[in-house]
Image (cartoon, rainbow, N blue to C red):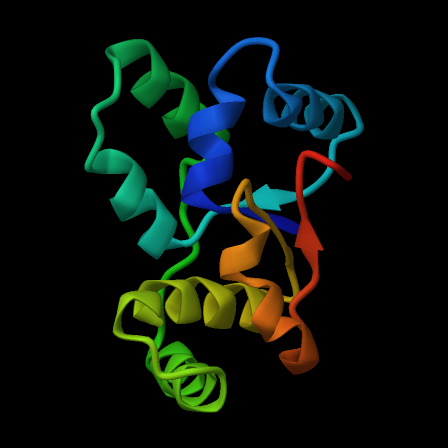
Length: 127
């Protein structure tokens, strides 16, 4: 299972990016993909075209919810890995992926690599 981060999804919808290539490969291989409601909300903030909204909606018709247990886990990540105010959303995304047993595909691995010791595996366009 691979969860898609907002940054990855935005780039994957652009032709001929590394993310586009990876997403196409995963779809051919029938890799189980998901997205958290946190990332889905960020994506919907746009700007985005009707075409991108339609494509993303078909790929992710049922985003993974953010649960009360995820809130506890996200707070734990926040407190354990730097307490940077701007990183709370990253902690929420990571907590949801960890609960789902998913690796996280991101175009910004620097935002998430600190969660490796907590068990988060990352996938980037570098592979």
